[in-house]
Image (cartoon, rainbow, N blue to C red; front, side):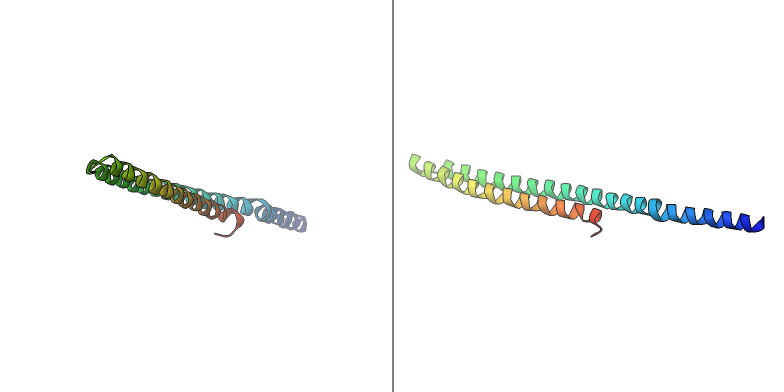
Length: 120
């Protein structure tokens, strides 16, 4: 009878260990990976927001500089030149800024899935 109790207790311990090994531990690891992934996404969102604010500030400075130059122009042809230069530069700047944000978003995506792949 004592042996039967010991055997049952050992089997119970083995079942408990198997459940912990096969279900509980992987679930804990997955939960931790998801938490890390979420933290990286939040951090990345903040980084993108700050970069967008920096870009908007730069664009506003450039626009005001162009307005000042146009206001100080001697004639219409000079105003047109200032406006053309500004539009050309702004188009180039917008492309560069969009590329920068796109690259940042790709990096954030890669960083945020790394914990889910076990590469944190």
